[in-house]
Length: 209
Ligand SMILES: N[C@@H](CCC(=O)N[C@@H](CS)C(=O)NCC(=O)O)C(=O)O
Image 1: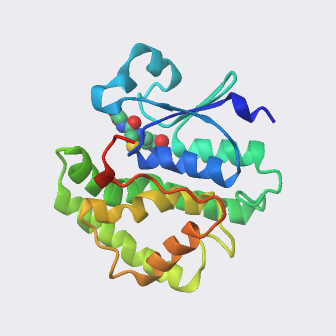
Image 2: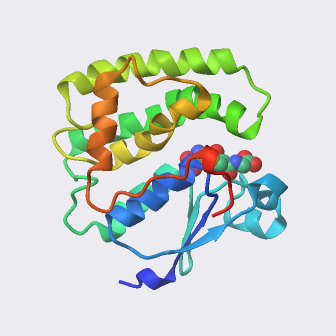
């Protein structure tokens, strides 16, 4: 495995980037982390747009292979490096269930807890109250789901959990309390107890290492 050739274009406070970094860590794969200066628009430079036409992090580069979009990166890493097929099991119904949660991560999570955090951490001019209520509606449903299920899909962690994890764990940064959702908190603790778990930096820690 040429893991030393992997490069992850990333940003320290980007939850989408953290998804990729977390999975690399769970798989015990070394990658060179290249920070893209989102605050100064480096992601819209001509060179970076050649890697991702949308001008967003994360982007994973493995030699000539370039993958953008956090969920696409999770699938690529699972297919390429998870030889035991633990994180993205091949069984069709399981895969479909995982895809359902990857879609939730790109829709309800993106427009709920991730959007709420964009306002408080990055000063983005979007409707904070609306993002908070979308986050609460999602958390209410996930709380019911995790009352009966240890992980997003089945009895083991999959890439669905990784995709959901970061923005839900960091929801309080966007003024979305997790206190009313004890089963969601139990699930977060479960993910954080997995071997090789790495947290995303808290926004309070700022950008200086
Ligand atoms: N669907 C993409 C979303 C990625 C995304 O929104 N990245 C943000 C950082 S968290 C970004 O690069 N924003 C900069 C911009 O859009 O200019 C994914 O899952 O990777």
